[in-house]
Length: 16
Image (tube, rainbow, N blue to C red; front, side):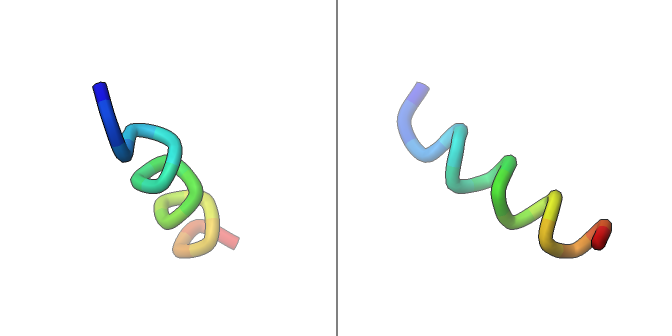
């Protein structure tokens, strides 16, 4: 799974 961390990072930034 590539970019899985990038997606997670973006989701966290949106949640914060």
